Amino acid sequence: MENEAVEKVRTQIVKAAQKMAGQNMLPGSWGNISIKINKNAYAITPSGRGYDNLTPDDITIVDAAGQTLDGALIPSSELPLHLAIYKALPEANAVVHTHSIFASACAAARRDIPPLIEDMVQIMGGAVHCAEYALPGTEMLAQNVIKAMGGKRAALLANHGVAAWGVTLDEAMMVAGIVEKAAQLYCITQSLGGAVLLPQSDIDAMHGFYEAHYRKRQLGEE
Image 1 (spheres, helix red, strand yellow):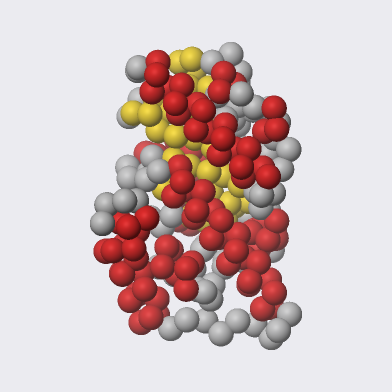
Image 2: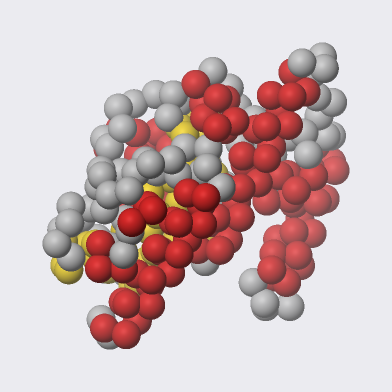
């Protein structure tokens, strides 16, 4: 690994963590962020370190087996979740696990977020599913989340929070933000008698356009 590339990734994670903490997506030291450096090196936030005071040196580098390659701090306890996503979804280059309020409310109720708003269905192609409950930090949780994702970019973690991934860290953060927005809208519409859900034909059309064109524009590929 080139030291310059590793330091760039560490700095990127710190900036993202502090930004998301300011948005109440990562309260205190809860939630975590990782980036794939290569197939056998991953940078991840440390366990128990508050994001307000996080520095690039605090970011731990681990291998595909979860063994520390560089860094003095213990990696996040949700490392198994991050590694499972990278293994199951080779396109993933970044993962964020958030504890945002409305998505966590849906997770606490163990409810899927239905396809109720256009930006969410563009990204997800349907509902955001809630994974079956398992203790935090366990392989069981990781596998439950992979199953709930079903290849999509996000899932809720029952009584816990959200996991989202992207081909870039910016995309992973955007996905997590859209999930939180959709969860908030879902909770609000419940007080209005429930949301009118989008028809599957429209969901398929919007998701298809997003994958074929709009996402590429977001990534600077079109």
